[in-house]
Length: 290
Image 1 (cartoon, rainbow, N blue to C red):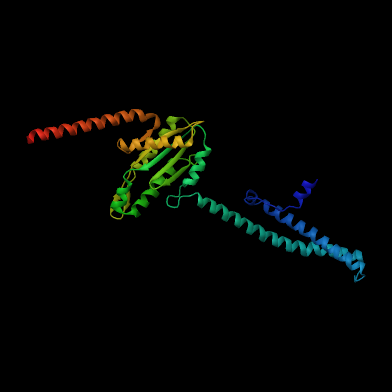
Image 2: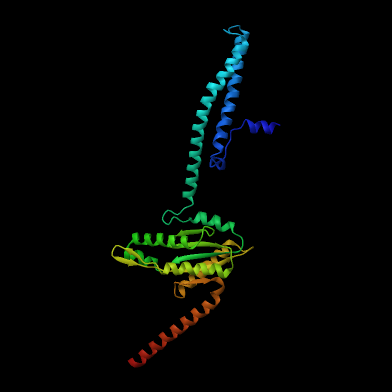
C-alpha cells in the first residue's frame, strides 16, 4: 500500500521515458494533479483557520466550494505551465548528457569509436568473434612527404572505408595514430576473414587527391579469435603479433594468428636466402678485388 502511494505521488521520470512523446501528457497530468491536491489541502487548512476565528465573509461551505474551484483553475493552470517547462528543461539536460557521453566515446579525427569505447565493446564479447587490428603501411612517409593535413585526410578516408565495410554489428574503432580495430561478430572464421580481406582491398584501391599530389595507402592486418575462456590481453597480443608479422613479411596483407607459423617459416627462409646471397656477393667481390 505504501509503495503504491509512493508511486502515485512521485513525479520521477527516467531518460528512456523522456524519449517517448506519450509520456509528456502523463508527466504533465500527474504534476497538475499533485499540485491541485496540494492546493486544495492548503485552501481547506486556511479556510478552517479563518472559520475558527470567524473571519470568513461567506459561509464555510461556499468558501470551500470557491477554494476548490480556484485550486483547479489557478493551481492547475500554473502547475501545467511549470510542469511543461520543467519537462523541456529535464529533457534538454538528458540530451546534453547523452551527447557528452557520445563525444566521450568518439575519436575526434576519424569519427569512429575511441579506445575507451573499444575496450568496453571488446570486454563484452565472449564468443564467435574475431579481433582485427588494421595498421596503415608507411604512414610516416605520407606525413613527411605531404604534411600532416594529408595524413589526416588519409585517416578520415580509411576510417570511412572501414565503417562502410563493416555493419553496425561490428564495432569499428581508432586505437590511436594510424591503428584501427574491428570486432567482427558472428558467422564462421572464414567469413570473418573474408570481410577483413575485402576491407583491406578497398583501402588498397583508394586514391586521394591532396593539392597537386595523389596519395594512396595500404594496410596490414592481424587477426585473432575471441573464444570462451581466453584472456582479452592474450587475444590482443596475438592479433598484434600477427599484424607485426604481416608487416615484416611484405605489408599490405591480412594475417590470421593460425597462419603465423607457416608465414614465419617462409619469412625466415626468405631472410636466410637473402643473407646467403649477400654473403656470396661480398665474397665474390673480395675475390675479384684480390
